Figure 1: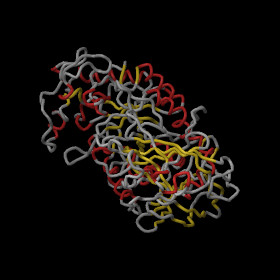
Figure 2: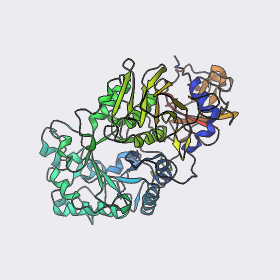
Figure 3: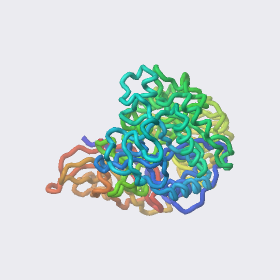
Figure 4: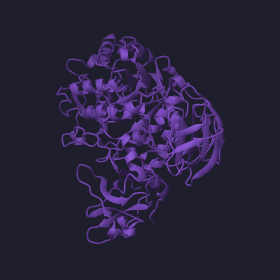
Length: 605
């Protein structure tokens, strides 16, 4: 049976004033620093090209107050056409050359760093320094910059003596020595106790610092003995004066267990808190969030924890809550940005079908396509939560207070007198009068819009006498803060300004990730005539090709301000209706494709 979604409330607000959403995506205005001095939110633009990251810094990340981008490894890597250029080839270094990767050239990388710095955004490099290539990559040909290699022999950089003697996979994960000296899934494990190896790694990281890089994620840090890593980090230079001129920001991938804890590495920098990922993901996936004011209690100290809902590994190998449940996933990321624990890292990735090793949208030679958030398989999840970055920045240093709950799936709280946020992880709307310490006034709802250059493109709410009344959408949120004033429309507060007169029609662009058999097509049908009035043969046919499959896309003009329901169907080319089930799709995220338009991203599951 098809699962239908009511979008009347969403589209009455969004489609009726779609032009007000352009601020999120139009690539024209210069970047501006956020009004608050606190900019620590990291976004992981996983597998993005250097040029695409530069564009995103200028048009989106800078204006919305993001602090840093975690970029994929920039060193020369293996190239594996026989594996269809998997994402993990980038985590097998061939050399430390920056000349060419699947994401661009050295010149592209430098331009990205400079452009992002001008936008007020730091670059954090994913540094792969525990190992080199794996057994399965032997004989695959030259690396991405043309270097020849074989396992344990990398001309001009490392030879056999530069690797640990335990040349087998880790088998006993309860033995710390083995975890730190044997091979992680067949990858040549560097002898990081060697001063020569330490010097080579430090030289690579210092070259990146010289180019303007501000920090590093240390990949597989728990597999590097703490003393070895400390020796490497002690060799690093200071960062660019624009970032304060001190030592680079370090955060380390440490998946804690009974053998190695996060605390073993916190004296070297921050660590990635994987238990936080599990706790927040389970809570939102199950609609059990009422207890989350205390999220982070008993975990790594907040000032040493980098927190996330999902990362590039967990979305494949520990998929508790991912983009396939988009409503709850977006809601969890918004909550992370509203809650005071840790340094938040937002994921931005791409879809795949079946094969979790699949690389990003790419050209036939394996190089990455430019990011187009309305096409290919790019998800661009960070844009859905961009408004909450300003909330996070504005409430920095304020604790949680005045928490209220309604059952297990609803939670609201204040962040001192600087902000207030309400979260609803249920399938029905939540209407309530909330008590807040916000000064009286009108505030922009940054959970359902953004606030950039003094312009609110979302709903607004009136706080009077320390109270405001709001309807928190099903699987949605409302968030107000003191640095985002709003303005009420002709219909009052709670709706975006403009009254829906800007557009008479809105172009709805649908992007559905659907796996099909040969001869099948995909259509979107819905409750209004423009979507076929639920008749599959009259629905809007979507298209795909070899470069974008399994993402099917199509567009149709709809009347502005008219709510509707929709679903996806599979059709056979030889029959008008295949009888296939409809998609169970999560609600769309809010963005504009420019002008009077709206994008809808869904997955068939």
